[in-house]
Length: 356
Image 1 (cartoon, helix red, strand yellow):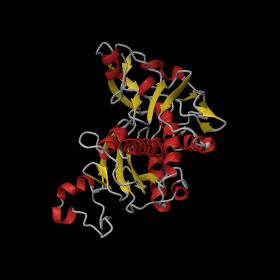
Image 2 (cartoon, one colour; image 1 turned 90 degrees about the horizontal axis):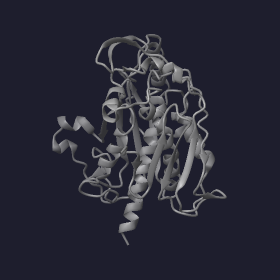
Image 3 (cartoon, helix red, strand yellow; image 1 turned 120 degrees about the horizontal axis):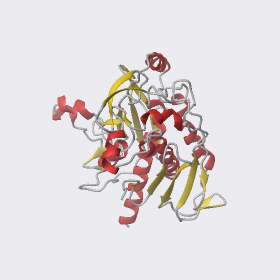
Image 4 (cartoon, helix red, strand yellow; image 1 turned 180 degrees about the horizontal axis):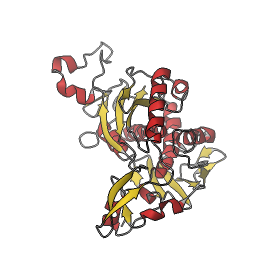
């Protein structure tokens, strides 16, 4: 039995569909009733993730137009499951005919085949990042609900390859969306864009990092011991394709620090002078901004020739075809934000259900 397609406890998303099937979609449980959903905002979030939006991403042409099937009446949530569908409009399945019996290095081909005894070679099937469009729908709904209590997100690219943004600030959406890389600093963004273009010309791919900052998160979100807030955020991020690392606050740099330097000393109102904890202490939000970075590996499919094997274990030469991102991070920004919003809302609803 295939499992692992549902995320969340109260606010819950179940997704379905493959990259080159007729559609992808999902069911969202736990949305409160009588809430006026702005459908245009949901579509706007999908437009930030969709392919073909600039010359530095995959040129697959998908409108990613979401169709809501249930859970809404005259724009208001009914409290019942929200079902939605996103048709696949631009499949070039024959681009993947050469992969019918060949495994791509560092892709999910081999592991899926070994687990299930069958795999959809067309664009990776269920392992394709196409599935993440469903998460963006759920995340857009979560963001609208969180907006009612003042929670705000600032999520942007802060590194591509060796080029890194030095300023870790809360940036407004306008600054983030001012360029196709989604780096809020103009000069750094231009350098990143040039690097991505050079990498693409070379038939290769490059990795990068995304920073997410969340402000006005209520104090007390998180469930000790195994459901710590940062543990669930980490799980959410690692569920995204190509993610290889997540760090909160001072992250890995804390391993080189002394406690006297790392400790976040208190102000009289309970806030802290520094924020090395990244807004989470003991697995529970402390009211400070939640800050974390997500590291993405280079996209596995490259145009350069590589040695690989087929299902019989025979050596073969493989050269990537089809339409792929040379760097995934520009399109992954709304995905990271969506997953973070789902986690924060889920813990907020869990807190509301246990505290009277």
